[in-house]
Image (cartoon, rainbow, N blue to C red; front, side, top):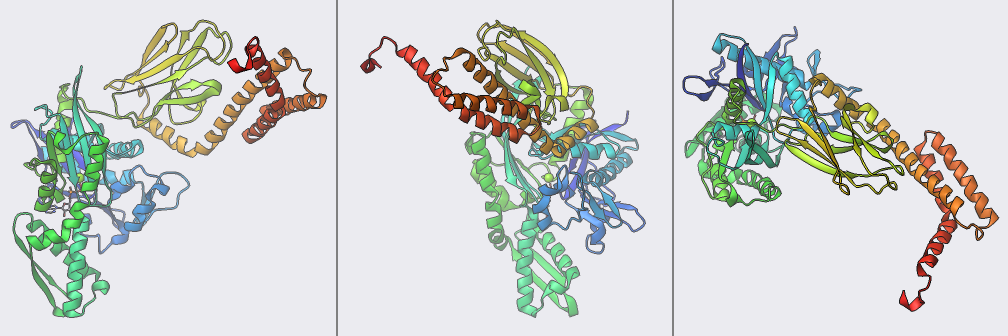
Length: 613
Ligand code: ADP
Ligand code: MG
């Protein structure tokens, strides 16, 4: 078996790290350009050669139509999900009939997973050069808010790159691991991640289980369009206005100069993280030179509104976690933009404690991924990490419809329960059919298990059966059904994802989106038929039992006709027709129902005087 690494697959930069056996500390691997940061950029040459990282970054301007950045924003998303991104980013999305996005790069077309795989391959080769050995397994980090499809797409990227993805770890959890906070039992951790294009805040809680300690994500919040890029843009707006004023020069017609200016401004921004002033010098067209000094104070005033925008999500995340700023045991800073002194000060003041920033903020996540990789590699089970359920779990109910009990993408361990009852008179057992999948109907989901719970015979709807689903930290599902009246209980254990490979999971998800419309009408039909069945039975019973002398002949024939029409509708497949006929029968039986009600009332009132009622 080859080596194992931890990878931070970031929006702007990606990194690869490993556990150093001699120091027992995680370390990032430096690439051929002397930096551990690999720009998350991919470019395709006219001859089809793939260029990644720093080399691709250099083509952003010259070969923009064959170069892509920020592909993470497209991972696991459907064409209609990315409308907002398309307003900001120049992605060239190919028209498609499926729900999988494809991006054009020059003459070729790729899925976001394939593009991310090119970045992963580059990092894999950095690591292989470093070790002089093959690397075939990895832990990859994802934002805590990533849904199942986004996680799945990230796993796919790993597989395409020839890496077995041992686990996906939430980025904030990785940050807490990198600082070893789990070892110190620091329970409540706020992770403030201010990167290049995104801002995330996560509130974590260390919880102890029989199997070891795990970090649970209590809440996350953030802004997917707020980051260092906004600071760069603010600086750029300022500089361009000054250039306009000083030289009467509009840079709109000079994209190369704008690019150079942006680079110089970013350099100044970085300098200001460790100095109180920085200088900017850029050659403009026609031999002109833009030169100025910027003080930290001026910079702080410029970016104050941007930094302030991060605090609203922080407040929301704390509110969602039902915790106050002072409840946090630790605050961890992640992301290159947290090097900015004003950011550190703002966060520190808010939480009333100095935040952790001893580690490189842009390396923290990768370092944590390496810690997790090492834990998995050495088989040490002291630290489990939360995973999510890839597919929904539920129970089949009347007519083959699925009642979802634990929705997909729930963090595990998870538990949920629901009440069920009997649908038929004198039923002696309830069949429980446990299912996995996103489709509305049992027949389209994956059957995990079936079992029976005995119930005492009685009228339909009398039994009260509580079905409880519990998924433990290993992803093992336990289903228990309990008759609340008798105390009878039966339970079974199932391994939900056992035997289901990633491609199948993906297919099931894709299908559920594709078939959503069809499922909807099928489900509607089943529900309408169930309802029709109940009404038909009730009507028949009433017609047999009740004294119908007060019903006119016309009313009686109207009811018979409506019953026949509803039966005909039930035999068909149009749920709207079934609903329409249910309404008609309800209308036709209004008087009958009144008579029955009155009859019941009279019986109840017998022997009682009106004023006693
Ligand atoms: P992401 O996780 O979004 O891929 P990073 O966490 O690597 O990105 O952060 C990249 C951002 O951090 C960029 O906007 C970069 O300019 C900024 N950054 C890096 N170093 C510094 C620094 N010394 N001072 C200010 N900003 C910095
Ligand atoms: Mg990041």
